[in-house]
Image (cartoon, rainbow, N blue to C red; front, side, top):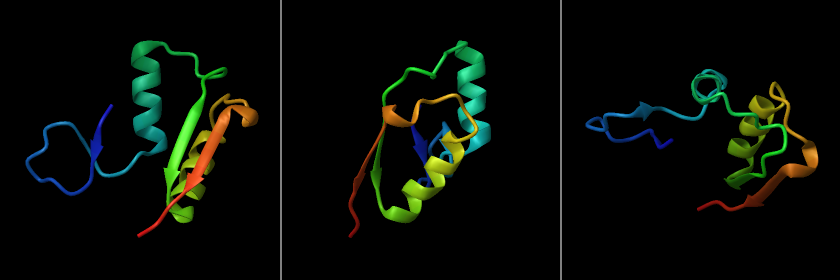
Length: 71
């Protein structure tokens, strides 16, 4: 699901990944993410936020992979 933060003409989800957006799409698709492989690539602050969001879902810690980058 694309989530765009800087294009006012974009017709999909806007802003940043949030608990509510993740819950919305997991509930709609009835997807079980407990065994999913999650990849997060971005600045440390963004990763910290997304890891906090994922903490509320049944994701195995060893299945969350991160890679740092920043401009």
